[in-house]
Image 1 (tube, rainbow, N blue to C red):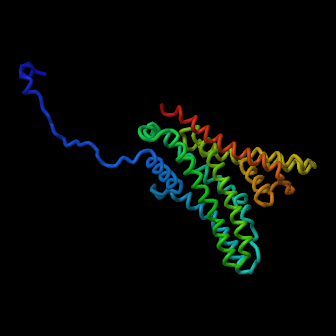
Image 2 (cartoon, helix red, strand yellow; image 1 turned 90 degrees about the vertical axis):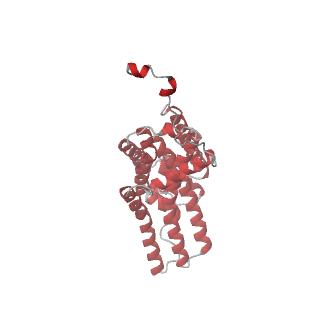
Image 3 (spheres, rainbow, N blue to C red; image 1 turned 45 degrees about the vertical axis):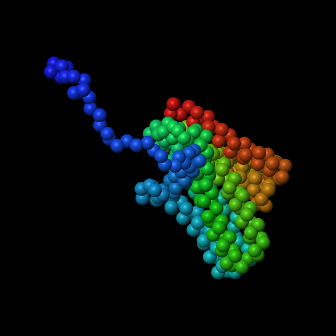
Length: 301
């Protein structure tokens, strides 16, 4: 400031500018709206909606890979006039577990890792949304995306069975059992996938970690089960299935949903052991949610 400027009277140096700011007097939608918006955005993002064309390629391909075999099964059943589907509703997700695992590995890190990497989580936690809202929305969106992926081929199978004029009561019962099975699978896989993905802000590490958790656990459990079956320790086969996510779902649907077990020798759990399977599944779902809440109590602060 020059000497001439310091001698100016205060009135000559003061400027008041009306830049048109006005207070907001519209509706305040609150936490529920913010939670719904985050859920919708995360669910759409899992299938690349609202994102670049490149982001849509993998989820669309995986969705097609899930549904095309069901359409082929239906076409064969209709043309050959089968009285029952060659593949049970409860077996479809077990058969296509690799596709489900790839979808989860690709989309769980996309859902949470980018927020951690670019430090946008504190923005979500500003008013009105809270940590519990963020975790609930992300968990529900990932579970919903998996349910859409796993339930769609079951719908194709069910509609095809009705088109082929198969027994309505049997097909409806099997379809309902299949939906319950994939609902449990979706909740379990969503929780585990998000927990693993939230451990690192690097999406690539998250993808590799999710694949490793699902693949290594299933491979190890299946190998040990096969060894136990060959050595005649068939009683150990059902208990070994408690240590892998997909074998947990297999055990629950074998015990309670009338499914045929994919365990070596078909030695699935009975009702008593199945109750343990169900408790472990529910505990893992609740534990995953609690782990995410704990993770986001510290992150970004």
